[in-house]
Length: 109
Image 1 (cartoon, rainbow, N blue to C red):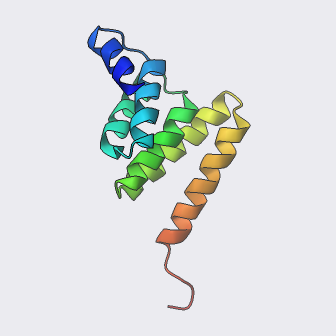
Image 2 (image 1 turned 180 degrees about the vertical axis):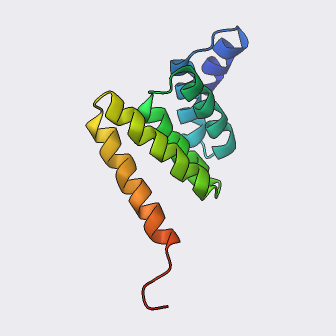
């Protein structure tokens, strides 16, 4: 699948859906930097693509970029709220809360 999507990109086809497919493929393959690159391009095409924001956050977190993941999920939550995507909003809210909880020092220290 990735090979055919890369061929389309090489032929000059470039849009949010293609970039999302490439990002998802590379994320699934464990190539997190390449995945993040395609998800970033996807949300440049369509800033309201909440699924792309969600997976961009995951790719960035896998690279150890916690601030980047947090920012992606915040933007994704706003995008999801903007077009009523309740499921994506809920998922990213959980991811964001979990990330913030992991970053805060435990009570009593």
